[in-house]
Amino acid sequence: MKEWLERVKVSLDLAEKAIDSAGDIPRENMYMLAPHFYSQVNHMNNAALLDEMSRVNQAQYEQDCTHDERSRYRYRFHYVSSFLYCYVVAGKIDEAKYDRIMDYVNDRLDLFEDG
Image 1 (tube, rainbow, N blue to C red):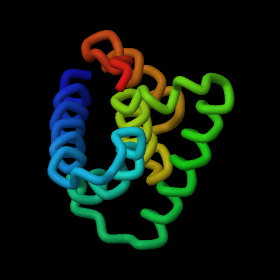
Image 2: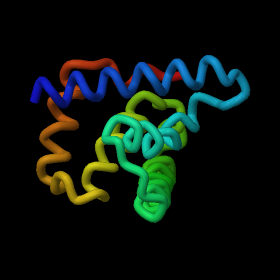
Image 3: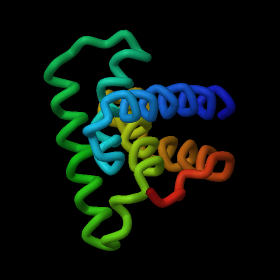
Image 4: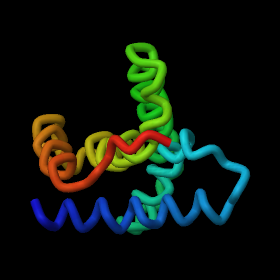
């Protein structure tokens, strides 16, 4: 599990730096970068799979926000969740493993820092 935590930390750092350097992208939209960084980290260049990842992550984000309006400001959580879910969409892990990884990462990182 430590390798997943490290992978998430690196990806989250890249995403936060990208948002900071862009300046005009709201932090709430950081989850949208997850497929891009998944692709970069895994040396994957499959446009159809990236589109599917984006669609699935968008739906997941919207679903979360319907339950709690403040959820949109938990950008770190949504980014990590989206990044890891890219592995599910790609068929690299199943949803049970995704849940275990999210629990592990959530216990070790502050993902609920409101923006």
